[in-house]
Image 1 (cartoon, rainbow, N blue to C red):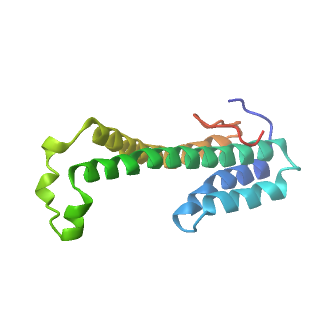
Image 2 (cartoon, rainbow, N blue to C red):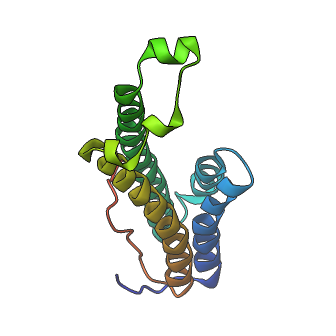
Length: 154
């Protein structure tokens, strides 16, 4: 991370680009739409804005990919563990008994699902704080690079 000589306008605009990813809590897909609009409107006028716009978009796309991978791991494994202990006939006949899903029936595959869900929660909390941290570093004029980010946009 290096500090450059950038104008206050570029620092403020880049900080706002990072913080615009938090709109996902209010607007569906706001974490993609607003940064793309902000970055696209000024990417040619400043290398600093261009760098920060690419960083937040790469980070958001990486978080989407990681979230989908964790969901594809956790949901099928949980469903498999439930339906391996209960047959479809029992569900159809209404003989589904919750007691059959006791801790004795928990297998290693359920632990994988629980770990994936815990990682997902940790990842979402980390994402929030990393966006705030990136906005702070950007407001100081530093080129910030998010950790564990795949460079989709170069």
